[in-house]
Length: 150
Image (cartoon, rainbow, N blue to C red):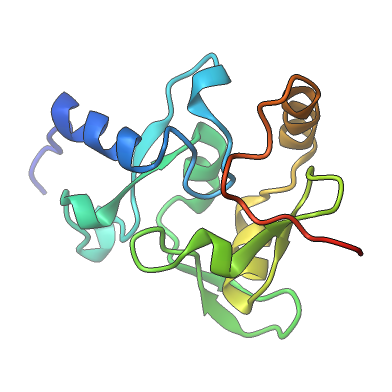
């Protein structure tokens, strides 16, 4: 297998801008993190994914590590194997919504539920970060839907 080449900085910057500097899975903001987010292969190279813009996403370290080479996981509600959220094909707002308190991501679809579980999008550490960010007015990200009345 040939050595993997690094993704050029110009492409990485384009991906960051396209993602609004948010992890395309948990919607954490890269701006407030100590470690730069990673460029993630939606379809892993091991599954014939490519180093093309339509197969690359911005992901925080945790989401990238949890996703790894997976493209599917088990829906916790139905028990069926379901595709994980694909930021190039799926709209975040169609699959996820913020809870009333704006700290938890709620899955609206089987893809949403499965991705939340598989990538641990509501892990304790990120909830604490969201609460701190909310207290200073930088969470949730602009444009993200928020559950109302429940």
